[in-house]
Image (cartoon, rainbow over all chains, first blue to last red; front, side, top):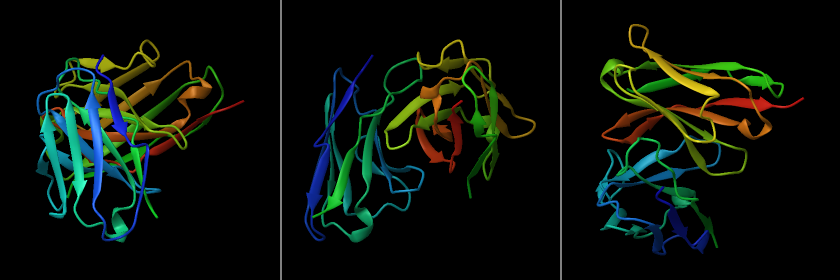
Length: 109
Length: 117
């Protein structure tokens, strides 16, 4: 089973700063990696698919990069609404029961 | 607009059973694989079960294998999760999820399952 490790567990930044979140897979997943955002009391929302493609309606300040085993989610200039928990997930393997990373909590400093 | 509305959650004793439902609208339900994902209070996301477009293939996480069964009725645009032999560790918010090319592109708002005596 592929294990996804996200770092850091918690990231404390101020609005306007740049956020860099990491997701590392224990095995190769090509570019079959997605990112989700979850705000308190809400369902997760798809942010990035294919490692780097923004989902519909996602602002351009969100970007994804990476392939193989190392992936990054970058938020170029944090807005107040961006403080949330972010999860990565791979969908490269079969069968389709895909574990998530443990999440990175992005909090206001 | 894609809408996924879960129902059927509640409080159940250990060893009991529950059936969750997810009513889908806003897309051609019978054309997409679906899944259930859960989230224990204060914890991360856990993929539970997946089902193919026509329901002939299902896959379960090891933590629920043999106890939970995912199914669908494409004529009713509804996804189900039958849960048996419930344990305290099954306590979670259960999300219905639409899949696209493997990953989840839409989530419901969830239904809460609490297993407690």
